[in-house]
Amino acid sequence: MKEESLEMFVSKLYDMNKRTVECLDLLQSAFIHNSLKSLDASESKAKETHQTEKSLTQELIEKLKNNPDAFVYVSVPGHLERVGDYLEDIIGCLRTKVKDGILFSDRAISEVTFLMQKIQEVLKNIGDIIMTRNVVLGTYVKESQTEISKSANGFATMHEERLIEGLCTPRASSLFLDIIDAAKGIAWHTKKIAEKLTT
Image (cartoon, rainbow, N blue to C red; front, side):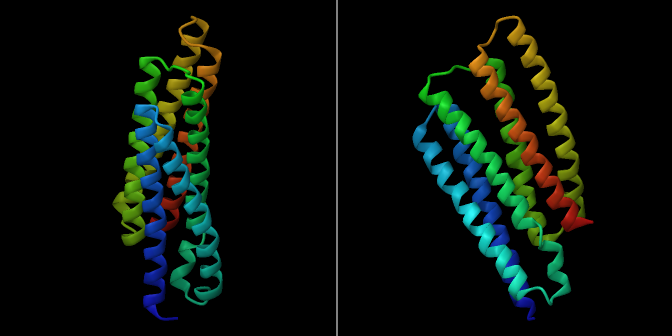
């Protein structure tokens, strides 16, 4: 197997991750501006991620199975697809929020924005890890997953207190908690990619 074939596959993985970052960019815009147009564009990017996963995994199995250097990448397309699944979960939550005019508190908005920004930062680093397998970046991503998970759990606890105090509605609460859970899921899968490529 020629080395250039592995490089081409790695480049396709990088592009798959790049689309995931673009999906999140559009998602952030949709969240800030309550934009269904941005949600539609974000959903389109998430669907591209699904289609890419199937073809990349098949390509890896068929063309790269005899290249020992390629084995480390086997699980990466699947993890990126799961990130896309979680992004689609957030898209669904935001679509409901926009269509039904559900309002989040300023606190909830700042918490979701914080998590989205952290996830975006991590996903950009995943792109670099795919290309370079940089151990320092891998450590950073793994530490970031811990931080995101801890922050998300703290936000969920504070949110439950706000719900008890009557500061938010049950419908807003359900959407908020679903978004928080999706953020944790994305962070977990990025950690798994970092572990696989930098260990």
